[in-house]
Image (tube, rainbow, N blue to C red; front, side, top):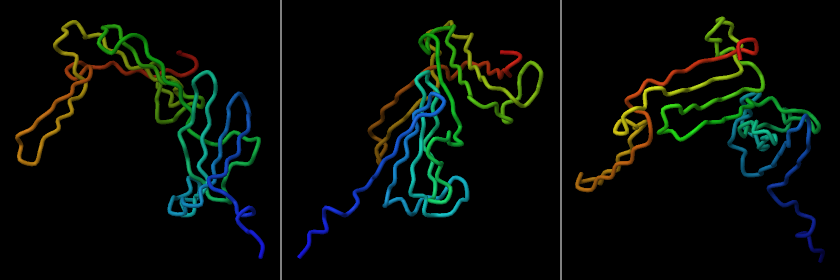
Length: 170
C-alpha cells in the first residue's frame, strides 16, 4: 500500500513576486469557491491577491478565478492607496491625506474640476473646543435597555474640509 498523504497538496498555497516596488501576494484557497471573481463576477474565485509597497501604497485584497488571476511578474489591477495623517485627531490642524497611485474619475479636482485627482485631503480647522471632539459614538445596550456603554471618537460636530487635487494642483 502506498502513502498518498505526502503527495496531497496543502492549502492555502502562496506565491510572491516583486514588480515596480510592490510585493505581490497570491494565495490559493480551496475553500473560497463561493467567492466571486473581481474581473468576471463568477463564483470560484479561489485566488486571494493583494499588494503593498514599502512607501505605504497598498491594494486591498481581491478575489480572482483561475482564468483572471494576475500573471506572475505583473502588477494586479487593484485600487492602490496610501493614507497619511498629521497630528492627533483632536488637534485643530489634524489632516488625513489619501493618495491614489492611479488617478480616479470619482475624485474631481477641487481647483480645476477635472475628474483625475490623485490626492484627497480631509482637514478639520474647527477644533477649538475640547468638548466637541466627537466623530462617531458607539452605543451598546442590553436587550432590556438596562446596560449602556458609549464610546466617542473625534469630530462629530465639526465640518471637515474635503479637497481633491490632481497632479497639476497638488
